[in-house]
Every structure is written in structure tokens, then in C-alpha cells.
Image (cartoon, rainbow, N blue to C red; front, side, top):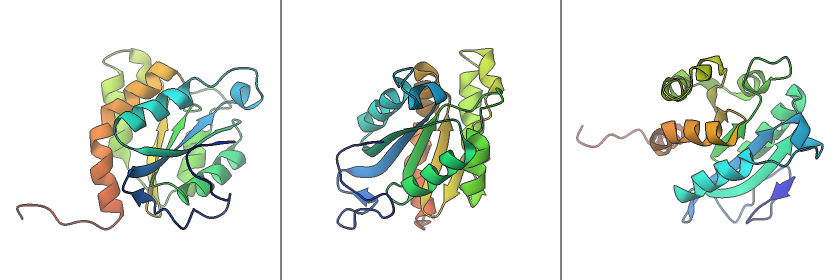
Length: 183
């Protein structure tokens, strides 16, 4: 696993840096790919997603790669939620037998946020009708939001951009900040 910017153990977040810091909301990127996890391919989607998040002032603290194994994905999602408010996955959201990222995500989330995944698909089908085949989900675990993206670099970044403006408010609501201006 490649760690970026901060040191933290695999079981606890760095106590000196809260999940939401002065440098931006802490985010983690998890690439789910058999071929990338065993070194057959270079991960292009994870770095592309991380760069898109950093352009929007998220602090990417961890980038990691796992195989398309449900238990491994679930374990890594739980770990990443300890150190990041936003956990973004790329890969494993299609119809192939080993595409199990949505199932792994659903298993670790307390609540799903269907509208975010729907918005990604809605925007995606404007570019390619194959976006309708995405099974990506979005959900809440504790005070973290987990968001599934497609595995292609372009599809992942386009899907993220389709919902990027929703994420700060979603994270505020998850953290209990429910006051609305003007009401």
C-alpha cells in the first residue's frame, strides 16, 4: 500500500491530524483491480482521482490498491474510514463476475446515499450509454462517505466531477452540521 503525506498506523488514524484539517478534508483513494494489485498493470485511475480531489482542496492522505476480493475490499474500506472523511474507490463496479466493489461497500456502510450514485450515472450516460451498466454505490460509515467510481481513468474522474459539488455538504451533514442558512 502506498501512503501519502502523513504517517498513520493501519488500525488508527494519526491523532495529531483530525479527519477534517486546515489543509482540506482528508480523503483516501482505493483502486480495486486484480491486475494492478499483482503488478501486471500500472494504476492510472487512482492517481487521476487523487489529482482531481486535490484540485478541489481535498487532502489525499492515502492511496492504496487491492484485488477484486470482497473481504479484502471491505477490510481496506473500514481501515480507510478511520483516517479519511471521504473514501473514493475506483474499479470493480461493472457486471463482470469479479466486480464486487458495490457489494463490499454496501456491507460496511450503515446507510446508502442512492442519489449520489444516480447523479453519476445520469451525467455518465450523456457521454456514453455504457454508464448505465455501472453498479457504483455511495454510502455512509460513521462520519465517512464512501464513493464508488468506475475503473477507467476518464470514467472515474468524470463520475467524480459529476458529484464533486455535493460532497462538502454531504460530509457536513454526516458530521452533524445540519443548520441551514436562511431558515
